[in-house]
Length: 379
Image (tube, rainbow, N blue to C red; front, side, top):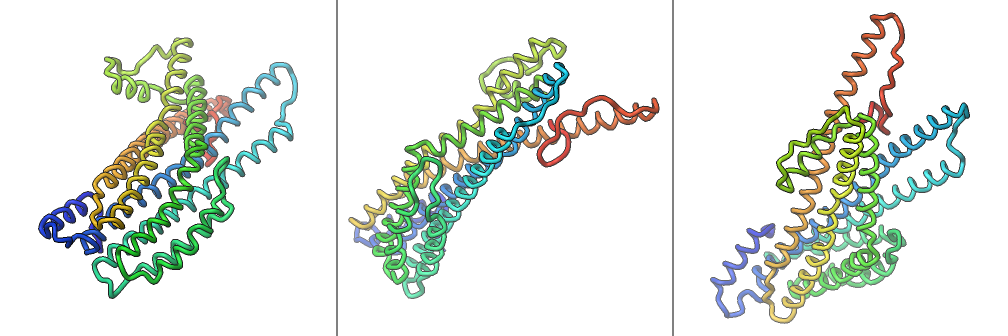
């Protein structure tokens, strides 16, 4: 089993140095392991990116449900003030349903791409095994699994992106040929051809900004929902404002005059902007991912030409993608924790309202706020 991560690259580099310039690092375990390490790291980062994008789409679905509830609530209040009845018209309901179905489809497409990237990682893992023991290759099984994941993408294009059908056809022959590979250099060349197809799909979708659009749409909806929650007093913007001040070196604890309508409106606007920009790290990850795939492909060419690939650059780029994704996940976790804390406050406030109403012998007439898609009061 090949070593993973930068430690694997360092170990391979030391081994090559010990072997000297006699060509011992050509198609030996060192070269195969080095390429395997970089390929595993890059493929895993690609899978993580696709999974993060799928989560962003799923978040948008829930946030949009809440945003629609706010919009309907406002329109209903306006109609009530005019002594008019209100209902969501059929065309609006249809548009919302269509948007939801498109988002669900996009999330599924991204999950399938993540599965493809995981199978590509397995193929690189098998390349390391082939370098270690050519008599017991596992490349065939890994290639067959990748072929199944690629076929699942057939005619499964993202909005505005290229048709993956071309990728399916492009990789079919290479995936068949590599199943019988028992030499690192031959297997490396076939994997390079497969990687070229994966890059073509990724770069094609990047050029039409398919990934960026997903991130920005999620950010816009999250920002709008945050603004409404803060304006209505259902969410506390102080933690967001405090983090903003800390990141910019501003001596401010995020507090503001809560009984001032203008101050709350301004706080809501700032919090909305901050939340809408939390996707910046995800955008940076998509850009670095393209560079990582390009560098990995370049080192495949070096392996074919000289048998001496230098994978440190590819591993570093894949590592930066992971760092960006870790930052995205940290922000998502912080937001989730804040939502949970706010929900507990709302539930406790509702219990107190009901208790006081029961003591007075009358039902509570104080509104408890909107309901989240999964049930329970919003934050």
